[in-house]
Amino acid sequence: MTFIPSEAFKSISYPDRTVKRADRAVRCSPFQLHFFQTIRDNSVFLTAIASNAGVESSYTRSPVSELVAENSLLWLIQVGVLRREVDGQGITDSFRLTPLGRQLVEKWEQEGQGVPAASLCDRMGNAVSRGLGVFL
Image 1 (cartoon, rainbow, N blue to C red):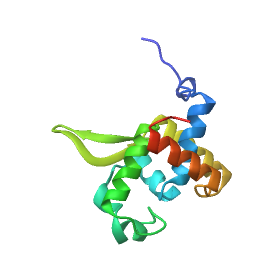
Image 2 (image 1 turned 90 degrees about the horizontal axis):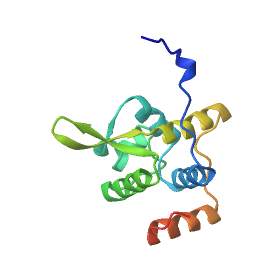
Image 3 (image 1 turned 180 degrees about the vertical axis):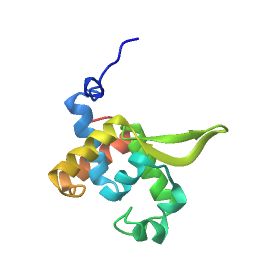
């Protein structure tokens, strides 16, 4: 049996277009960096994200309804940042980061800032992508 040092395991390399789309989707979402840092290691249930609970936990900037939170989370799943947690009985209502999501969080942590604010152009591009189901 061959031992492979942990340094040999490299991060997945994604096309620039994929990373840019995911980055834009996160910046346009209502979630803060603390939310993504938390779900890197622990699953978080939808009820902990919605309403005032999300603000109190520093997961969201302002209170969001369960529907808005779930729609935002589903979009982040589509662009490859998140995945739904699965237990022995099937899919749950909790979420975890994907390797792409981990790369984005690590980048923002190294920069020493939170999730950067989205520009008007970012918001328009994200809205078009979400509305038309086209990955721009």
